[in-house]
Length: 215
Picture 1 (spheres, rainbow, N blue to C red):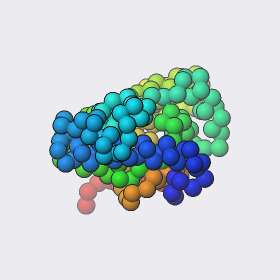
Picture 2 (picture 1 turned 90 degrees about the horizontal axis):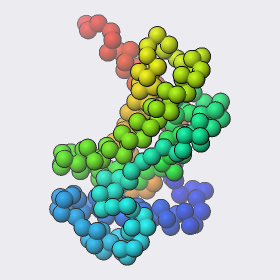
Picture 3 (picture 1 turned 180 degrees about the vertical axis):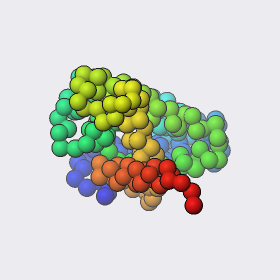
Picture 4 (picture 1 turned 90 degrees about the vertical axis):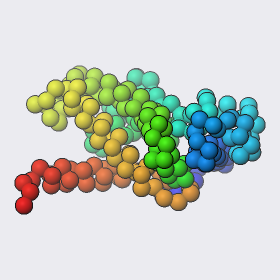
């Protein structure tokens, strides 16, 4: 589904500027190496001023590798979990993640560029993954508290609560990585909750298959 559908003009313009900045930054990093890209070059390529750049990005690195991702305030995140009665626990965590990021859409060209960058310049892997690791840590802490408050919410009570929280958040994170690796085109694409559930179901099938004796 195209993310532009149903989006207001102001939001589309903001997103177009964000995409232009990130697209230019990643393209320059692929062409000349990420360490040699400057803010001035990104601004020239995206046809924006330096002040506009810093209105959208906290740093040069954020434009190339992705902006830092932090979970919404704890109280707000808890309210999202409590209100998500129409979905699974995985769906509820996904909603917290989407709210934290501020959107459920990704730009295919930027995602593909960063994937290529991580393959061609191995030292970019850590900074590209860093924003997701930071958010995952926050989500794990949230889920741990949520499960500890009421053990009836637990799905695998035979293991430590922290382990269950880590495993749950890891499933969401791994599914998102699959989405990022497979996205195509140049437009923004919405990451749907249904897509996450489908990918996790496929992981379940694979986990079952690899446990079986080899023939």
